[in-house]
Length: 507
Image (cartoon, rainbow, N blue to C red; front, side, top):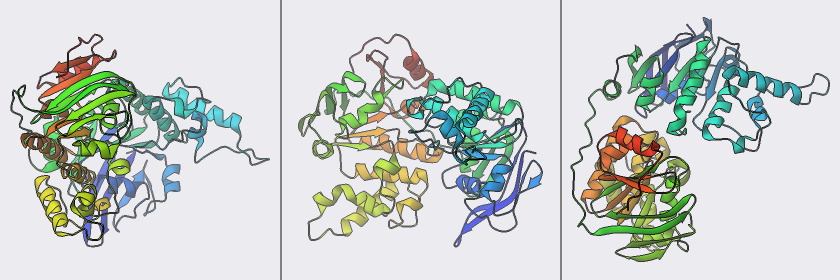
């Protein structure tokens, strides 16, 4: 076997987060590791890579050779284990060859300086092995998301003997545009064709079933399914293993809202790739916005909410009209528009603060005074959010950094619901969350709309859009917008990738 990990456990204080987990991966195999946030996936990977020391009693073998426990990363690397993390770990200011060499630059025996000729040859050799046509001197900052991922894979394979080794992909495909996934999956298939194995850690069950040969499922720190062949499995099967139950579908009733009051109207929005976009969201309505990467739809959340100023555009709610070219976040909030941003860790949450404190931040000026903030309303807000969004926590005073990714995302959604917006804008709210948290978040969006709020869901996930949205606006390559009312994800994909999109007024 390429990897044979047995009886891996990890205890933090009184909490056992991983219990006697086994993971066996054969040569030439793409093996997926899935489970809800907090199930033990990250802990298992961190034990394999030496970040965590597991509890006594486990063992890790690579190609039949036992690694010392706790794993020493240098020894694991020498045995052929490498990792590509979610953020890829590339340095934009360096070239392709320089990034591939990070952590193992070749040096001149005489001067001890980096031998750039040899380093470029190493980069060229590993790129050729992958079939990637990319000049070693190309600046990484100039590369597309897929090219960047290819460079990260090349670096992971730099020291591998052909046909040996294990590459761990820790959510490394999450940032890739959907139209590029086939190409990247083809590259991964080439990697395993000569015997190298891949451990794919992913929340994307569709990708797991499409790409992986086998899958191991963790639930509550234990293995719920070990090395199950993916052939014949469905997303529902995996979800049942992950949750121990069937995931209830998000209920969406067809509603006719043409006469409902307008929550927000946007006119002539221009900038950051957006060209004269106009749209209307009514109270009680969830509207989806999507398109191909590069059509500008991804920039709309920040342009609408004052985080980025556009070249042109106005925003109107019942509270007034705002010239977005002069607006900031405070102005847009005062107009009743709030944003749940895409990057929850960098743009949305203060991880060192508690759940209660994160929820209180947007309301301190409105609910508190310079000399007295008060805790009663903060406690009430936190209790309501924990109950409404099913946030799994022992207490409202739990630090946000101690929550799983899905529960952090729920806190972020609750944070901006607490300001009682007229329009709630969400950018990829189910990104990197498990199936249970995804269903909770989408149900919250439906309930929020039912309470009379307008919701704009900006996403590249067709299943999220059809499950949650009353109608979906698809931005075409030429900036034209097509409106869909469908419950079929394939209809959304067809519209996104259609070469010709008929202009429709988004209202």
